[in-house]
Length: 165
Image 1: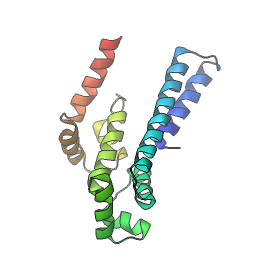
Image 2 (image 1 turned 90 degrees about the vertical axis):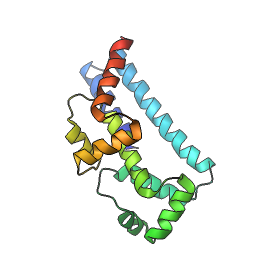
Image 3 (image 1 turned 135 degrees about the vertical axis):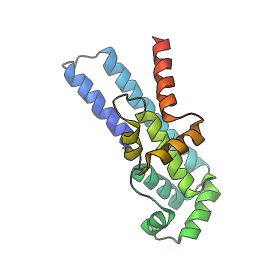
């Protein structure tokens, strides 16, 4: 199970335990989040399988998705799978459309967006949790990929949440 799915599952159990296992709107909400995450993961896997991506590229993608929080380089990923870095770079870009490090950074930014919804985590801590050793580099990449800073994203997310209630 993916890290986010596992986290959502643990949160669901915690919410249920706090309510003496009586279904509440919080339980239903947490369960819906978990189901949407599992569905999303399934669609992502099926999208790659249907597109004819070779299994060894899918293995690299899945490995990146579970190790994004560690220091990664093309050489370290290639060594993990026993490929030459140039070969892995070419085959990965051919099937995903992204260079490996771009894919790694996009994965990290995607995780960071989820973490930014938690107001108690600092930007520095989120950058660290997502595998960025430099907070300023994280903020620069976030702005490049999302068009706004992490702080602006956090404020916009909570503003949207306020407007819905």
